Length: 104
Length: 174
Image (cartoon, rainbow over all chains, first blue to last red; front, side, top):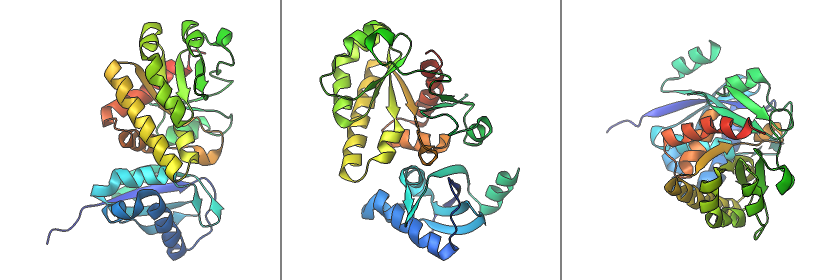
């Protein structure tokens, strides 16, 4: 079976999130589902993989749904009760390259 | 290619933060550009297009740099003014903050009408800009996100980059 190609996106929030990874992952997936819909959700398959600092996090998505993931992050304005704006700073094929570029 | 954005409120994006978001410069309303408040003041300024049936001809004749539709009805009106816009050299700007603040079926309608409008103006050869026109920090987007939204509207990667570069021509005139 051919493995799906993934894309890692560094997302920065307009304010401090104050959430644990699991909680953020759940809220982000709910928000993503509301924007992309049930038909495209699998194509994106988003997952929060790490939180480098208090107001940024790394999202993994399928390469196929990369554009939809970017559009969705632009349109998400609320994570649970928190009103927030999300900016995608950088994206990469590997998490190592993403973090390397983000620190530079 | 240098990319540009425009915002409605000062201090939403600092120049350093703008560069981090992938923009060479972020134009601010009242500092870098002014929106036309009436037809007489529209020379070189962008015009907010809200109401259906609003007479835009006077704005275009006075040299408005661009029309910025704010709702699905306004996007549908653009077709009526296509010839005049070509004659007077006006462009269309997609205000992404309007799409961001919409929700559900209204957002879907807005995206649909905006993509129809974009297809029309690309066919006619009218200038196109895409800007967040953010009034709050939560409405600010990076260049990568604006390009992704442009792709959703049916514009290719090159077309999206051209639209972000074209923002300079629209927002540095007023």
